Every structure is written in structure tokens, then in C-alpha cells.
Image (cartoon, rainbow, N blue to C red; front, side, top):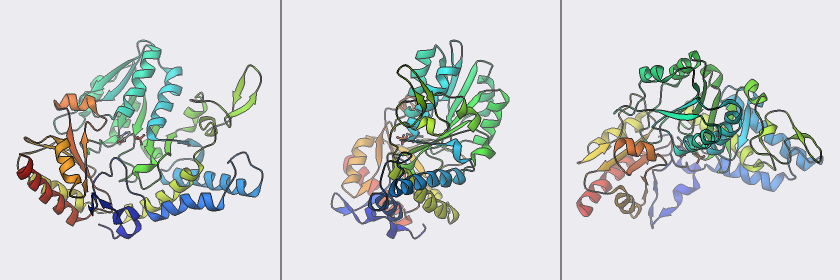
Length: 397
Ligand SMILES: Cc1ncc(COP(=O)(O)O)c(C=O)c1O
């Protein structure tokens, strides 16, 4: 663990009167004071609606917002105009499905997903497929929680117009071999969208080197604020896309009957954007970058080994490369009961279907427990977790 705990005000909070052991960072990470300060600074020092105000306070806000776009672009190796601010990764995926999908999908076409996708990377495709007559097909994950690349090759043909796949699974923790996957998909001439929600918080990603068409992620899983997400796409693809939502700020001209659209990326950011959150996201990127530089994987391996020692535990997935996520069930104990038990010990874990009902169906379960670690977690917290799970087994069973 890097000594960063002092930066997180939440870690001083109690959970049910006990010392907080926060093990739900895959759902949402805690926020360091540097990011909190950056967001409050917007309200204290800036003002005015961005992109509209000629006065100094508004200009300062606009500059900070656009500088943040540049910072985020640099972080993932992209150009500034290829970064669209959205309210979440979910909105980023909806944007692609609705805007790109509406003009590029038709009856007979296929959208290829995997069974390890989050609902946010399934439902937008279901909706656009129903509108356009296209069909969704799924690659089935292996027992190890991985994707078989030969299965991918076999599933690809001229009908597959886009493949949308998670870079890292929010259930198995699997880091998919995304570069190889992109290469295979590109050779087939299909577009590829990557859901980067669970990867960006843990690794360096260079979207240009990957050569993906779309890459989506959320601020609140990478030390950033809620209410801001990112969509990356190649400029030449964005140029051809219609707005996803419309309104003020995205137009060139408006008459009583018609409108024309402004240039990218602003064409996809209608209304008054989430300025404070987007600005603070740049600070989150600064913070994350410094953590990634000092990163070590030891807690990841340690937690997995310790969890494996628990009697009656089934851990889902055994991928060769993983983020620090462990999903599991314990024989004879419902994951919800376990989560409640641990809650009263101060430990926050997730239980349920993790927005992955199709994957739960494939695994033949309805729910499981999930612990997820981030840079601020410690070996002592892992030991405490394992002790308390063992206690739960004695008390609940
Ligand atoms: C893999 C994955 N994709 C998409 C999402 C949706 O993210 P958000 O709710 O921030 O839009 C999540 C959130 O848990 C996720 O884990």
C-alpha cells in the first residue's frame, strides 16, 4: 500500500460505529482531498456558465474545463477533440449505441458482446437493436472468467458491425487481452468499443496505441467526482456522428424549423455541462497517475491467497491477469447475509448480481459477494476481512 490514507477524509468515518474498512472501490472509489478541493475551488473562485460568458469569471471556468479535457486526453494518449464529457460511462455507451448505432446498424447486422458485460454495456445495445432490427450475439466466457480468442475469431463475419467488450470484468476482475482483441476485430473490419470502467482506475491505457474506436470510463471509479464520465473516439468517427441529445450549446444555427450542429467534441455536450466535476476529474487524473507510478500488485496477490484459504469458498474466475476484485460465494451463506454481517463489523462489501444478470445466469447463480481493493487498502484490512468472514461462517451457518 502506498501511504495515501491521510488524503481520504472518508477513511476517518465510522461504518455502523466501527472503523471503516472500505472494500467496494469497484463500485465507487473514495475521493482524495485534492479532488474535493478542486471541485470546491470551482464554486469558490470561478463562476458563470462555461462556453457562454464573456466576463472574466466565466472565461476562467471555460479555460479550466477545456484544460481538463486536454489533461484527460493526454492521460490516455488522445487528442483533445476526441474527448467527450458525459455524465457517466453508462451515458458514454448510450451515446455510441444511439448516435453511431442509429446510422450504422440495420436488420441483418450483429452487435457482438460477451456474457461478462455490465448491464450498461448490454441494455443500450438491446435498445438500439430493437430500433434498427440488428441482433445481439454473445461470446461466452470460459470457466476461468476469460474470453477464448478462437471463439472471437469464429464469431466474426461481415454481419458483425461492432464488438463492445469490457477491458476488465467487474465480477471476475479479468483483464481481457484487449490489444489482441482489438487487432482481431479490426481485421474483420468491425468497429470496437471498450468499456474501460474497471481498467482505467488500475492501469495505463493508450487509446491510440490500442487503436480502438470507442473507449468509455467513469470519474467516480478513479478517485474522481460523481456525475462525470468520458467517451473517447477517433475524431474522424465523431465527425460523422449526429448528436445524441440536443439543446443549447451544440448548434451552429437554429431556425424555426431546423438546426445545424457545431463541431466536435461540443456537439455531444448539450446544455450546461458538469463543469466543477469535469475540472476536478483532471485533479483525479493527476492523483491516479502518481499512484500508478508507485503501484505494486502485492495486495492483489495477497488478498487472493488469503481468500482462497476460507473454508467452503467458491471464487468466480481464475484469470491470468486481474484487477483487485474477488467475487465469491460461501457454501450455505447467502451473499446478502454475509454483506450485512460484515457491515456491522465496519466492512463494506457488495452483494447481488453486480449489474451482470446475464453473467449470473451463465454461472448458474443469482448473486455473489464481491470485495474490491484500491490503492488506499492495506494488508491489515485484508486480514481483518478474512477473520470476519470466518466469524460469519461460525455465526450464520
Ligand atoms: C464494467 C462496468 N461498466 C459500466 C459501469 C457503469 O458505470 P457508471 O455507473 O459509472 O456509468 C460499471 C459500474 O459499475 C462497470 O463496472
